Length: 196
Image 1 (cartoon, rainbow, N blue to C red):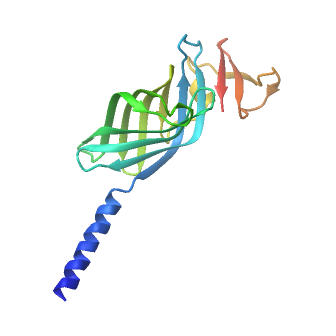
Image 2 (cartoon, rainbow, N blue to C red):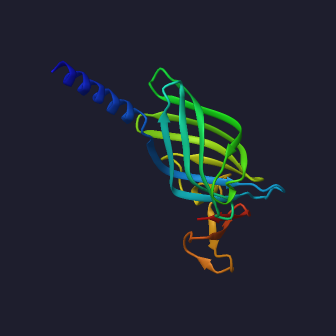
Image 3 (cartoon, helix red, strand yellow):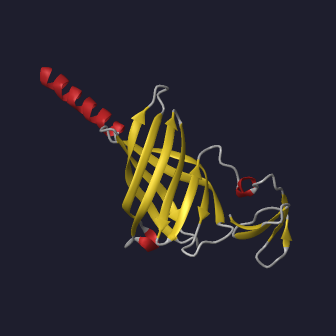
């Protein structure tokens, strides 16, 4: 009986340890702002309705971070970006995550590429909010991730400018953002490209 209980205890501990290492997925909107090597003004923006980030507590003061299904400025796959971030537990039990890395492996069309990644996030209960920077082979992307990120039109409206009109690439006026590239004219005279 003692051997059985010892074995049962060992199995329970193994199950708990395995459960602790399973990643937790956080899905929220993300707004990507792309820049090119030659700089583009205004920068190209892409709104992603459901970006997924997986976190796993490594148990050593770091978290494994996986940004799932990253795409480059053209929409080509750059794979899942994987790295470790330092974790600090705050007084309110939230966790601050930070990483500033020079050589992180990419995937997809860029499986041969390693580039810089900067990540700052706050894990608060069931919510993750983050900002991160990825340099996908000379095409940098600054990203805002979290439940409070709104569609690209709301985010593009800077300097109290409102959307005057939205057009397709061919110039046809449309009522709302369509899949692909949209040309958005603002009341302040600026025109921006938005990828949806």
